[in-house]
Image (tube, rainbow, N blue to C red):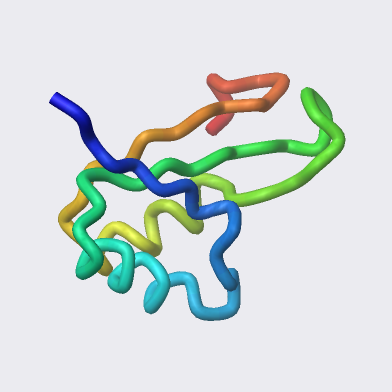
Length: 74
């Protein structure tokens, strides 16, 4: 079965809750989050606290790609 999992990395982070709800309304099956720590890769993106704060915004499953040096610390 094909599932649609848009990446949230392109979202407007100042309106992340609205963006997540819009993706759900558009028919996304789950949401993809790239978590980067600035050490394993040079970029920094969303962390665990942001993902936790988005949980009440949607019932969609979250898929995360961890690009972090110490994943156990999340």
